[in-house]
Length: 479
Length: 136
Image (cartoon, rainbow over the protein chains, first blue to last red):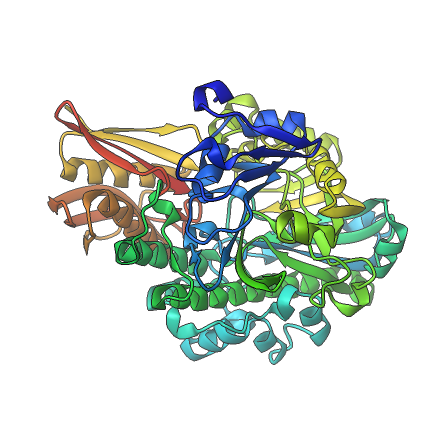
């Protein structure tokens, strides 16, 4: 929709940032800011992203601005790629501002192998990964959790898995928040959500979730890469998944509850999916406790997949196939963080925390560089490792983008190119693909996404995070 | 008129537009649309038993969302995709229906949830028109 049709004009602040003024709509409490160069700005205007971002700017207790990252696109309620912070004392928390896939995130595993050393075994490796990492229900065994164990997992996250030799202390140290949000309360998670989650630890799910075997294709920042122990030619594995049915059910339960109680708090909204309650209210407190539990579950899920991937690498490469967790970041979450002495509830929906060297939350070995930020591309395109920058704290509540960001609907993608053609394209590039069906392949084809290089460039130039390394896909296992 | 559904363009999710002569027909059609999405072109033949589904919601738009989420929950738990619907009772705030579907080997995972994003349910020319966004 054009600006004229919308009735307001955006102002370009600098080559990387556009602002929609607070005056654009009468119910806005703060302006809306979009990190985008001119080309991405044109793309972002094609769907309802900006309308949804303006809706976020109307929520009670929002501070500074509602932000959209350069990979932003329309979602439901919040746009995907949205960041918003609310005062912890007077502001709200919104399950729709976190999304259904609570703590959907990305974990990078690094081997000591080069891609050249692994080349001959690449095809069986990808097939073994596809057989070993389930998309749907788990396969029991060491990843099965009874009711009591699931409650402990929700409270403690992957730390519980260390007791079963499914995680190491080093894995936890290189996971955001140590893989555990302390406010988690399993009692706030419904029996229905637990029922859905019980068989899902160590499972991928569907859509854009994947396990991808990659090679470090190019290092941009040698010092940071050395701190992250990444080198050109290195074989790595990127895992993208979240909290599965458990997280979806937590969101469903609490959107419903908040939709019901909003009149009690005098909250009216332009979109019911923004349903929210004061953070300090009983409903807000309970949702936050449940969301934290689901976040812990998601970290445990990625840890479970890590365990399965390690089994595959061990089968294929023996001791040489050791895999180290470089880092694990979430991109669908609400966290309590302090900015200029204010406690804020920062919602990141399709946005990655990007704390710089000054943050005590950056793991000590990475302190000189900043926390790793992973930006997966689409199938067939590069993914990026970035380092969080201190400037992001002031510009975007310490946030960067989370991916390339969709540019095309699933229907349009299927009409543009068939799954069979997409598979052939990828194979011609030397990328092996294990995917449940042609439809899934067509929907996730590279052309359905924005140009990840451009997205990353905007993040880099805006000072939110800086480029460290580029990862090129070798084999993709889709959920 | 006959109830019908179509899928609308959305950058990342799926929007279902439903048209039906009554709330009962609308809910049944919504269930069929969900089943179509979850089947992803497969055609399993083994049918499960009829089961009764009943739920309450604050209003009929929320009822549509809750109904779809209820079906999603059963589908994931029972490894089953709903395809046949007999709505026994549907009012502004509740529905009671018999539902039957087909068995699948793995829990369906394509649709994560029905959302309230952009939700609308209105009467147009004596018919009900609804749009609901599904997180996929």
